[in-house]
Length: 420
Image 1 (cartoon, rainbow, N blue to C red):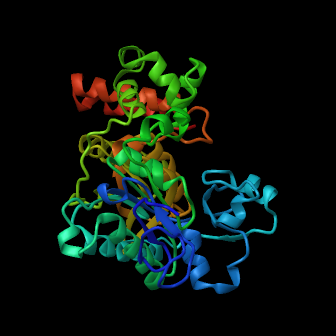
Image 2: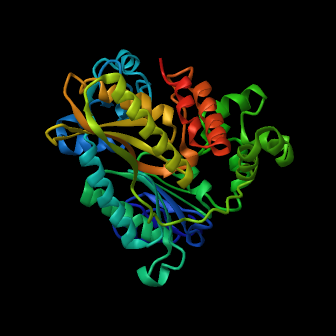
Image 3: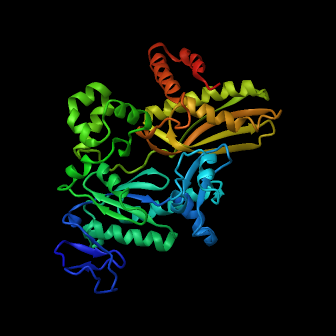
């Protein structure tokens, strides 16, 4: 018997002492001493792209599914069956297929995923107007003050939303509920798939001590590797080092991590009313067919998009190349990245790959590049498969400072760290 507040996860009936639901007979209790006092949530769709593909093709239900492209590409996402074989996002495709040779590989259908993501977003906004998207398939929600509207505490409202998404969209989502954004996102990772994890104030300090620094939202692979080299592997290590030392060694990132290690996160959930993409394009005075000249024009647009993204503190998961032929036909090519970016170098490398197949002698009158599926700029990560990425990123940051000091004339010097 339990005296903790709780609900049946199967039918949302309030539970008193018994874990057996009096309404449906299920034994799926959600209990926590602070269950009805928390209101900040993070909702994450479970293996979203793969889940949509399995929903649309039931024959894939029990099969390992990988969303990605080509043997030279990388895994965008993998279903939970494929993950049992060790397949992970951003893994090179050849390694994924070696680990799971029977996997069904499906190229991403971004238009479908975006449509379903918008559909889920609207369901979230039905329960609270305070929804902050992180990507196409996850968002923060603040349900403070919604109890009167829904005649239910936030936890029960979230259980109902989780069930509605499953019934109407046909996929599962995992929910993390806590008292700030960092802990809510941490909680949503703890009980996947189709999970609901609650992390309260009383347990947060002890819970966080065992968490690895790599698991903290915003700690990229380069920062994590540097921390581990310095003997800082867990949040307990961060606390031991101390806030002042973390700030002195690692700057703003170290200070932020020290605060998060103790459960402090004062960021508010901010509804997304910003633009949904950042892009730049240019029309040529004379039509251009030469690949090198097109790449030169593309580079300038990549720098402009990167500048705007950095100014707005956003990064994007989807890179889109736009071309207009001499007969005014518009060509668009897209690629979804394993990590969001705001770097001109990354935009150029991806745009260059998308451009080459199209530059087959045709003449073009316009070229443009853009990023979409925007997230917070702190999500910007380096290519895990590119050992030279950190060097080029550092060079780009230095070039940004040079241009800020000496003007945009320094823009052409940025080509010194273009990909070979």
